Length: 218
Length: 194
Image 1 (tube, chains in turn blue, orange):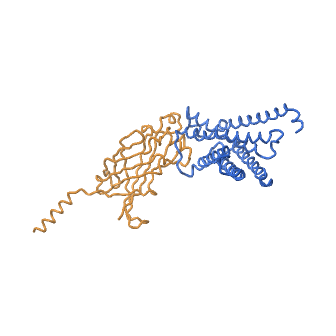
Image 2 (cartoon, chains in turn green, blue):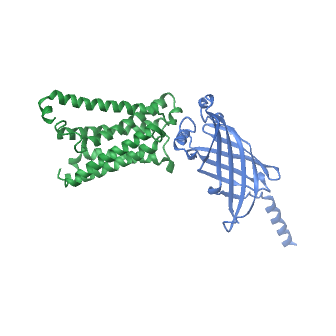
Image 3 (spheres, helix red, strand yellow):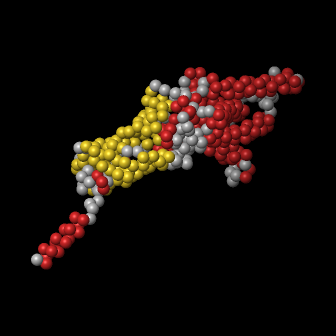
């Protein structure tokens, strides 16, 4: 296969296009969730407030998908380097990381749908606070990756921090996803969320496993 | 004779000064501002957990009593976070703009054995309306739990039209989703030093 792809650049373009189509199909599926399985809060929103809430939800599910893509991009062995070069994958990982900053809009849109009625400190808002912690960790992770050279850290120290940060982000993301909306508490979306949790857990194990067994050489 | 005259003058002076009603503090753990409202067929119950109050109440001298109660609208709690956020939004309480609901009594009078009528003004959002309340006075006694304190109990219940106070513009009411009449129950334990 490797030699066939090397000989035929058209095949490489075809395989990359297939990945893109798969991503777009997944995105379309994710975007359909808030409409096919609407949360009760949507029933109480009209006009501009509804538009904000729906937009917030769409940004949220897009972010969820980008987190999955982010893990897929760096998981060992999933995308062979003859298909996506190592440099290309890392470039993609960085660009996708910047794309994740889109999630900053998520709480703004969701809060905007309720006229920015902020959450008081109460146990019932734990999923929302988990979401805030997630966003903070995510932004920190992306910014420290983008401006790594300016940090007073060795590459090795930064990479350990980056991986631990990624672990935290994925943990917070799954906690937020499974608790924040009724959409993901029952039925098909719940099963999908659990499946996503399983896949991401597996990808993390692969990434951490490689880091441990390769002796952190890369 | 001179000494007796002095005592007589002092007695007259002090009896002329109106007695002040007893000042009480709300026991925050045992004072509650509950509400109930119809949602299609079921009844949603909730409460406001954050409030302050200045209460002077003397059952023997109700005319010297007053009730000034302040409820923080952001403390609305129906045990469902998303619903409470919606209640804090512009669709209902608009808590950013109107953080408090206030009740100030103007007159307290006795209507029956243990019943007191409190006339006063209720302000919710940008609307102030006269709101007479009838309190049931349960009595007062030494607190069985807090030595050195006297505890008194008062309850009132009433119904108000939330739309008259601009809590909602009526769209959910017209849809048949959320009622406009809100049943309110205020139950208070008041404390003062012995």
